[in-house]
Image (cartoon, rainbow over all chains, first blue to last red; front, side):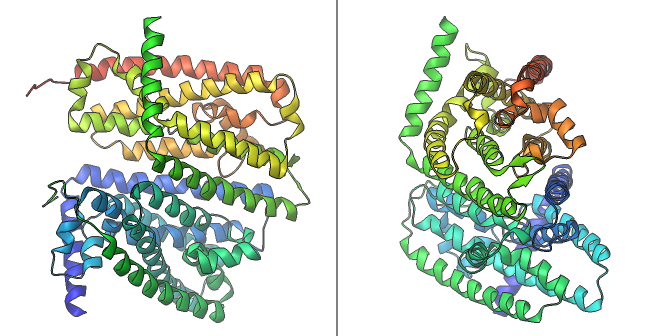
Length: 264
Length: 266
């Protein structure tokens, strides 16, 4: 376990150093992504202005929602960007080299790539949560809750990403299918959480964990709801364990079709 | 005539090619359900909470407007930016420049051809499903609707291709165009009326959507609104204006970009 953690940190460090070598592109990606994300804030603020509050959700909550979603997205797709490239690796046969590695396979795949633009998501997310904190006048307890919830949301995001991209092993056109699934997971995660009631809330909490990465963390922070925190925590652990199980089962379907991609 | 034959050949070949890969069709259908389907359900709930009327607009109109946006996005015209960047980064550009056909024209036709099959499939079945579920708004029953929809659709294709080609051509100067692409793409997404339909925009945003090229590239979403009856001529004129202005800008940028290419052979 310790060894795996050390390896993960080492791989992430090297990936960051590697990306930072192209400084101009690195910085432009970060700034560009932060600006890009601001679009969603604008959009939903106009939405709240036009439609009014839905389910008690205000413009401030939208800022919080974008903050949580952006940070969890950023953490997973910066440090563990390799998971997103799994469809390509499986289709091209590049997955062979991961299987030959003596390291933990999931960690080896996940940390095989780094996406600098996702750092922009993290920066954007942090700014959003600071603004959110000021807007709802949070106390110490809520600040600690936010930190804990970022961690939990990132675990859920990672678990969802592993589950979705593990589908690459089952389908011929892996990229197409996983992109569709990922859209289905991500789109509701960015929508005003107040609009999810009844059956929709159930589906996007328990069957597709979209609300666990943004909407529920916002509601927990706002209401200091311990019961919801426990629910999200338990679901995060379940999703994490389930995703590892799915990944391990899925890799058994892999058949090498290498196009001489060793070392890529 | 020769030009039309060539365009027809490229588009036809790509449509045939795409028919052999059902995976892409699955992706586009999934994408449509994931984005548009989920949004339509959520908006249905939002309209229910507001007694079926927001900003004087009904759910049925908003739903069709959003459907038009998402179905148009299936053509994937925006991918032309990254396709051009890839040609520049890989060096393919020097080979394509040597061909006896305009590079940009070829890229545009390629983009249209590669998205047409999925677009037609999803548009056809999506229209039937949506019509069965919520029906048609009265604005879609007026005589000018279909001809002006087609006109606006044609304008949207041309303007989108020009807009995203300009972004792609910037790859001749900056290696990674992604940050610029994101900004332009999000501007189109917001002002085009994707997640928030144009009818629900505040006044300032509505004007921005009307007079900017980003909003003009998605005027197809305006065709279902009541105002279309009176505004269609002005909106089509605006679209034409941006096509001419940005088309000229694209041409000048392209001329300048050509000078930056050094053919190394090999």
